[in-house]
Length: 351
Ligand code: ATP
Ligand code: MG
Ligand code: MG
Image (cartoon, rainbow, N blue to C red):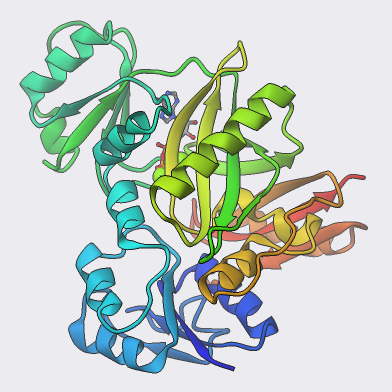
């Protein structure tokens, strides 16, 4: 068998490595932290920064194809690798998903609606932007945010008192988004093969707590028309990026069933973990199939289910979950259960 390289050593890389092993591949993980979740199950780890030229060149020499498990891989690193080895998903997917402003312009450009947004570079621009959104909105760092980090909510604020806000956000480029009065949140996990073939999983209904995904239920309680529109939007995104691999697309669902795209993750996605329990081919295997040039698997769901994350001290539920019938439990091998840290997840099959 040949070798697949994965940039990033978190739980997503770990689960990709496990699926790749089952298909007969060897895995090399590039990750600066030793003993990371992915390295525990990979054949080998290159311990190097994501932009370290020597580490990248070694990865390129050792692998038939390179992929990644997080969207903040430096574009320059993906481009350096791509000179000597195929890198999937393509660098354009990184560029689009790394910056919320670029991402929203991309989505609007292919006729996918997003929240209204304005770039914010300083406190005066923030005051101006908030005034245009009637004093309410979510201020986000354009880059590097996850699990709701790097966000600040404003509700019905006046026209002043913003001095120091941008500095408190780290003096980085920001974006103000209008509040979307959503009824629920859903996501679509979809894959595109090297030959352009598609596999789209059923939309999941997602609940967030404190900005972190809490649970994903499938099927989502949405109309057939909303589900079709979500799948169609995912297809359009995959085609526009000439994409190869699995993508996660998050949406807000309005009370009338209309969809507003939130963000795109060019990788396997937490809200797709249910696929390992309720589909013959999980999102992880699907991603490996796509980047390795294998035929995609059928994304059909054989059971209804609810996936729930085990965050921080939730890990104490491990043994009682093991005793449940029709519950599939998955831990990430992280030693320390810090608050807010994703330690594992479980999926309850319902029918
Ligand atoms: P992730 O871990 O999914 O990458 P993130 O840090 O990139 O999260 P977002 O997905 O932008 O953050 O926002 C996190 C959550 O905050 C959303 O799932 C939603 O519940 C809420 N939220 C974000 N933006 C908006 C908005 N414009 N209107 C209403 N709610 C929002
Ligand atoms: Mg995000
Ligand atoms: Mg999100």
